[in-house]
Every structure is written in C-alpha cells, then in structure tokens.
Length: 183
Image (cartoon, rainbow, N blue to C red; front, side, top):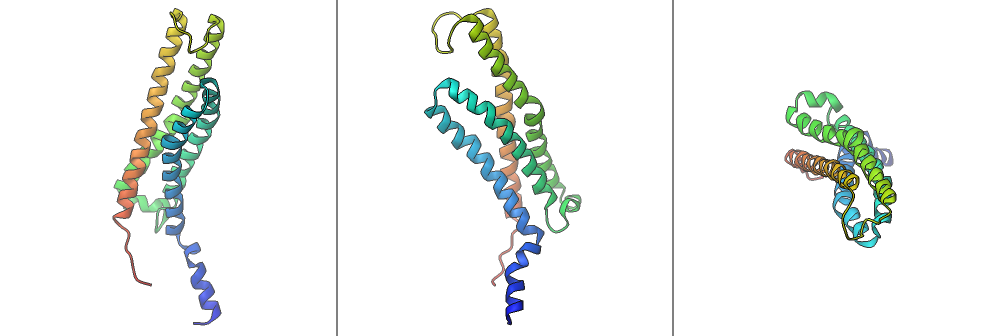
C-alpha cells in the first residue's frame, strides 16, 4: 500500500455519514446525562439558592437549544442516506421524533414558562419582603407563584427525562445494528 492509499484510508471515516452520526448521537446523550444528572446536582449542592436559580435560568435555555439541535443533527446524519433513511427505519423515526418533540416542548413552551414563573416568584418574594428560606406563612400571591413554578418545573423535568429515555432507546436500537468487522 503506497502513502496515497494509506492517507485515503486514514481519512475515509470523514466521508462516511455513520461517523458523524455516532459522534452527534454520543454528544447528544452525553450532554443530556451530564446536564440532567451531574451538573444540576453539583450546582444545587454547591451554590446558595439565589445563585443556583440565577445559574439555572442562564444554563437551561442554552441546554434546551443544544439538545434540540443535536436531536435534529442526529436525525439528519442517519446512515446511509441521511433523513431519507428514516423512511425505511420507522422505529428510529418514531424514537428520534419523540426525543425531538419533547426537547422542542421544553425549548419553546415549558422552559420559558418555568423561567417566567421563577422570576415572578422572586419578584413576589421581594414584594412580600421575605427570603425564600424564611419560616412562617407565605402570602396567598406567593403560594400561587410557587404552585405555578412547581407545575411548570415538574413538566419540564418530566419532558427532559422522557427525552433522555428516548435518546437511550434510540442508542439501544442503533447498537443492535452495529457490526464489527476485523480490519
């Protein structure tokens, strides 16, 4: 084998849609698992409540955009024909479609609702002249703000967990089709 053939062989994965697909899928799953189960927990334990709230308000909109974009890119790079391959793999289309729809709901509906509810809750704390950790009775307005936040936050958490589940399910489907050929 001459040097040109060796060079072509070394770069052949760059011409293969499957290489990009695996990289994008693994980035999607890694991002979801890291943000959902590691980063959020570490920040919750390490930061005071106000700093944690501020950080989450900045991080999650970015996370939902990245998650939605990576689901789309994963679908666009399905081998061997990109999105056209989904016509022949309806199970994959359904699973990736679910992951994308769930991520999209968090991106455009429940993420922004949760963020608005969080801001309204903080504003009500200021109006009531109390901190979030004060004991005693909360005002009726504050109880309503907390309820609104809790409902939207719970929906966002559940949508995210379902999206992670769909991503893992797709990964299992993908892994079942891998074939290892000796080089």
